[in-house]
Image 1: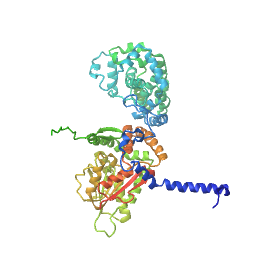
Image 2: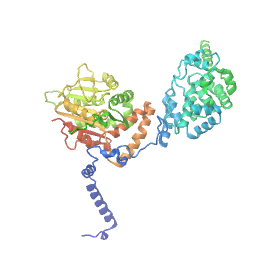
Image 3: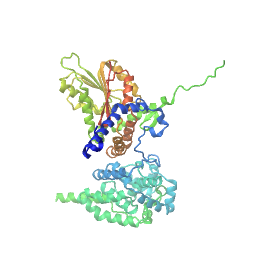
Image 4: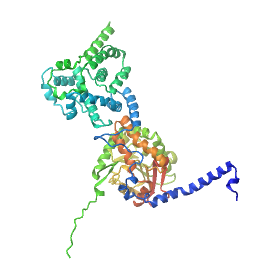
Length: 310
Length: 277
């Protein structure tokens, strides 16, 4: 019988490795592992004790999400947030008309520091505090459109309904926030999302892509949501030259001026000022009204037609 | 002796509720909720399958069809009757017919595609329009049927019953298996391709991280439907393990040849076979 010490190093290694493999494959062979499981009662039926014993329950052992902070909340891990930013930014660049990409990009890039500073801004203002206390929501049914039509000509409510009619849209219920940690920050982001149409109405910008970009720049300068800034940077790259010229020469400077010089839009309690005069409101807030985009485009196309005729 | 009659509830908690992924819901609601999931994923179904499994589902389905090797053998006197359940979009069904034609020159076997969800079935019918099976003969027909009852299919009328990635959505899986036994002829084969449990712990870790993290995200970005894919992933975890499902097949009356199931990709999917004697 050879003694292990008499063998060379290589032979010893080989012998030990071979013994380990053979013994391991005998002990852990398929039949033996199945038999072990059968003894534990894990093989042929669901273990009735599992519902009482969390450790052996069927729920995934390796992947547990945090607790949801509000209904519909899906707490994301860091790698999921990063993937969502990447995926939705590519998607929203190529398909800005599809809402799910804008939603995903907005929620994944609205990081805590940004929303916390918005929260501080709201808490420092009496109307902001009222908003956070009452948490009003704007949905497709919360505004009575018929009532808005009856309001005086220059009121905010009437401007809003006239803008809706001109654009041919109705106030749709915005998608509920699902991926933002902390329920108050989620409400702030939801409020931002729901007031978007009011920003359009007060500035008069249409829903075409140029108008949306202009509103996004305005929002970014005033409120600071990262998604609008990303939109302002990258979205114009896909536009035609005439659209880019209009944006860069007229609307971007307007948005920088108005956005930076006006009072925080997030602190406006729109539902309570529907009867207020819109010009007075703009003057108070420091919002300039930009040139009418639809008219500019009409003039541009007419010029083109004339040039072609000539 | 006065007997104190204790009122005993005739419905135990098991009868009233069942699982929908990880949620607990009323039994009667499950069918509708599953229907909602599949109606919303129907149009993107194949794209999402490709993205989620990175194309591997095609390999699984091809292996399933090859292993079944079903078709009327040359020299036999009667064509076979195939039934593909929960086969809405038709990929297994058309694959089976193709295999039978290529291998055995079988151009006579009939195929019935049954699905409980009319939207998925409509996708299959659309696809059928452009295939070569749409040749005017009535070899292929589509039925909206509940797999647990199959009221339009007679007893002992089918030779091959296939169900791929469908049985985990049944409210009562045992009833589905019993119905399969009823409608198969003696000698008929029951074949089920379904997601199952991974036995290797290391691979299971990767698999769970992938399925619970990336799949709902892909569903959200590609199909704009995070919740349906979350349900799909949870329903996979809830499905019985291989040996348990083998026991259920035997309970329905099938003879299960040893070992009865074949794990694909380390157990991510599994093919279960039963024969009606």
